[in-house]
Length: 310
Image (cartoon, rainbow, N blue to C red; front, side, top):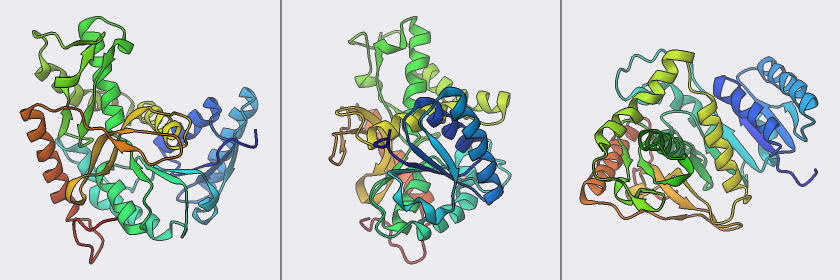
């Protein structure tokens, strides 16, 4: 059990709690450190997780921690969220950009110098927050978890619409984790075959946009979907998957961060494997990049020049 990775979670809110519970149940980690806004919150969550650990016989060892205790973790999951009211009717995830950027910037400054692990950012708008954390901290192994969740939802919606098992659907959603998501329909296959011509992609895209809103309306926050995406990403960045492909936010042209398909190779840096795009899909990806680049201007660290290398 001693060779299981140590994972730190920053944020004990809805998503942080769900990720932590999933980690205990999945038996993916050994030490599980929880840091939150207050030590009381972190202690409470660690104790609750410990109850779960004993019931399941899990190897995870939850404990409360300060940010400064996380330097030895193999991976960190950033699920912090500022207190704010989101009044956005469209671009809902962008509603937290200003409020959450203050928290992410502080985390970036506090990230332990020389930290060698991977950092997975879940805080929305995730493409902006992942870039902000990377550029504030100077840390290179930062990934935003968002487009992989969009891809999972896309596969589910297609499978339901076509009446096939979801395992037969292969395809990507890239670009922004938000309203500028790009559905890569050109390269999507069902049982190895191209998408049926009569299929309405406009309906699929509309359903993809509606899905998270319907979940929020019913239970207040999306929780388990993001947690599943985080666990999948952890397996990839920790080298437990060799050759797997996952859509995560990383730097693209001119320094902008957006969701891209990454091929993970155990012990090496992942490679971007952009699928062949139609002319329309390429234009959509360019539009997503332009949108995210412009949005980042309002939260960029003082003195940072857009497009500077990490």
